[in-house]
Image 1 (cartoon, rainbow, N blue to C red):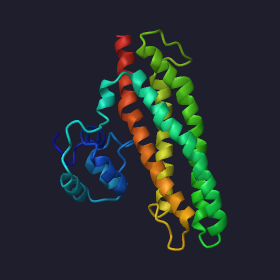
Image 2: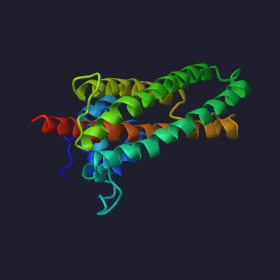
Image 3: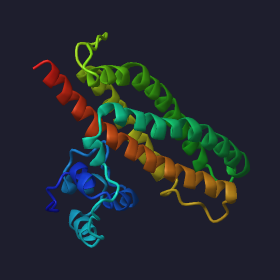
Length: 238
């Protein structure tokens, strides 16, 4: 693909998965904001678009056969849903309680010297409170509907179109993305303070990994699952 400032970041990641890590490190949103051009996404992140473009151009070229989101464009939607649940949903159900425990320990040991942890605590609790019901709505409402469509079955539901739950899920993704951005800012880019202990370091490393996984998770849904589900529904009713 031709890489320039008008390239959509969602398309960039699809064709060039090696760019994910760089965009992550720079705080450039490629999941919820995958519809933006590289210029728009860079500006939204407070960065110079030309500098981001130059850095991306210097990265290693895409490797044929490397793991890529493109593979999920070719898999069935049922297979994609199974991957999302087994990989990303399962990760959140394990990792959120672990991070909550670590955060409690860090707050008890370092809260007096690091008042910023009060905001970090509030942000993490808000994030977890948003995510758990979100997973349930996907697993109990949206995903079964898409599976029935994928099987060619009549998909009866309390909504007229798959567009309705998708709009709700994407609005919730935006809220999660906003909380992640504030969490990154509140932790100075997940940088452990000089007086931070091993638990403090493990907590911030865990936050960084959580952000990376959520970005991939949301990318798969916003940029691949949802568009394909809309297209499938239109074909079934066309």
